[in-house]
Length: 220
Image (cartoon, one colour):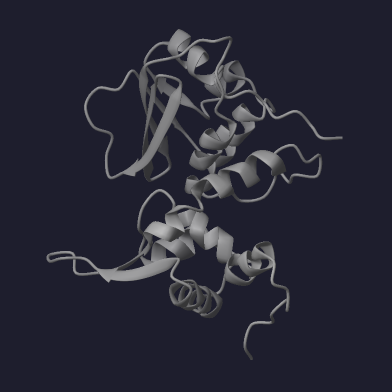
């Protein structure tokens, strides 16, 4: 059975026909920070079946949003990545995350992928009392590594194989704990004392870093 259409000439309706199917935008979310293998996508989306994920990847490929590519030897594995046009969805997804983070019904007890937790930093990033930090921060979320660079009031975020050089700060925690700290459900004192988060670098630097991610104000 083919996808149902809205029969509406509005560009918003067409956008929903492209990425509005269940799991489609979450597939895009998992690819924003770089390409992934099929198994990596399954790991980031534990609730999706292999058949449904295959179907969504095929549909996103046909729409020109995702492409499949074989890595050069010695890896030789197939990966999925966003096309240039697909990558333009990044600010839309982060804006959607910023809007949704204000919902009083946001579930905080459900699984959260590492990429989703990392992207929440981009969604919540804001200047703190006019302070423009110049920092490099490594983020370890389980087996996943990310590098954040803050300069001139901008935040740059990338998934990396390993954290290079000597960043100003390295944070190691779980996606759920990071989300709890950003949402102010748990304090930095709490997670450090409980061993749920570890720092390499000064506590003062960590506090200055976290000030740039204000907790969302509830909409209601």
